[in-house]
Image (tube, one colour):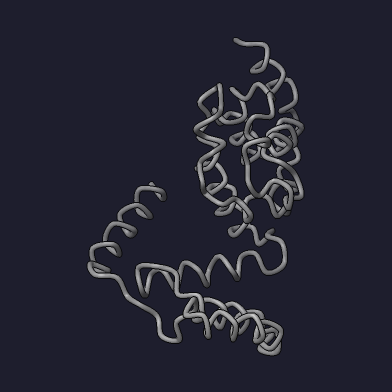
Length: 190
């Protein structure tokens, strides 16, 4: 048993079964805390806790703190952390798992889950992001239609420059994409 595994095992006393399961994940056990993931992350500056700090908090048994943070929601899914990790940790995939867990426990930061759900809904409908629809869905889901007014000047500039289409563009083969996403979701539940 490695030193890191012994450390984590020694802290498990008194933790929930879910927290213990997280502690046994390769992402937590194999992390050497070098900080390469955090240094590589383009959105780390806006996160409550950097990716390295997320692993450290999990090792300390602070699962709820991690699930309440904005870190998983701000992950850009760029895979820089995964590609550059000397331990080969699939950190981006782990962030998706943390998002799902936060949603199940209703522990997400205000607005994060709504934006996530609006994005998924828009991609499901069109096979890609449709910015206008996405923002409308997001602000309506938060019962804040007046929030759209704040975006109006910026939206108009983008519209005039041809950077914001009024109507969404649906990709060819959207049905095939839907089947693929459904298959991935079923694999994730198994």
